[in-house]
Length: 95
Picture 1 (spheres, helix red, strand yellow):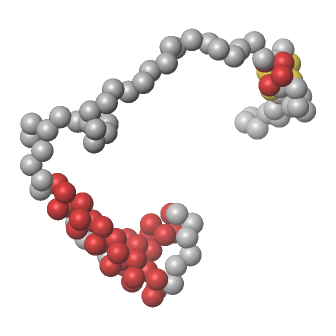
Picture 2 (spheres, rainbow, N blue to C red; picture 1 turned 120 degrees about the horizontal axis):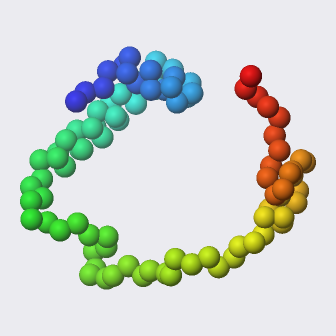
């Protein structure tokens, strides 16, 4: 896959980033280099390789799935300008 100048400018516009033609040309080369590296990675044979979360064989620590700090709805909405029964009140924006 190759990125052209029009694609770089379109991505920059969608990202709300202002780029000059010179910057876009430099970015085009950098993006093509990154995509080339990703294409090289897709050629690696990973069949039979188990997925891992770390380079050392460790197990992930887990915590109990329990509510530890609840019943604070009133404190959560305490600084809100308008509330009703511990819910935030907001102006209607859709007709």
